Length: 189
Image: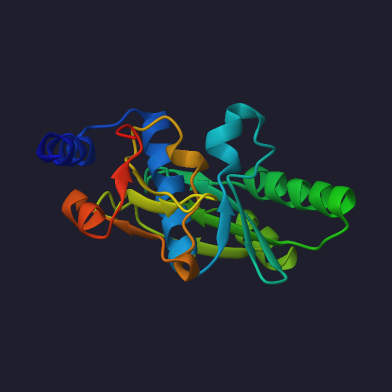
């Protein structure tokens, strides 16, 4: 298991491509939501360019958040077309599912004055969250059959795994912690 910890540590230090940075940012935002008790579907990572402007679909009780995440250079500006894409996907969701989600736009870049106006007038929540590669990425999950498994960010089904704190699932940076708590690596079953 020591070699897996080394592989994981190397992954966290690795320089990423632009798409890799985008995926990492979505994973970071997902981690924040899941740690706060939300069920999160990673729509963007799983759907790619067909994500309809929905990076994450987040559910908690009767609340639904549709999250668009943009990890761009601080020198770049987010324009209103990106806010409008989120507004359009919210409308689409409302018409299709007959539920009213909250739009959330999370970014590392500044908004143009018009984009700020659109955020306000469309009642979209906007947050600046800096990219942080140091959040814990090992997922300890208990499957439907009660099997305790852990997933690393480079494992095949990593993004399909949900973490629910109330079920005893958690994120960590330590493979030793996974093993001590009875979890086995998904590749070693």
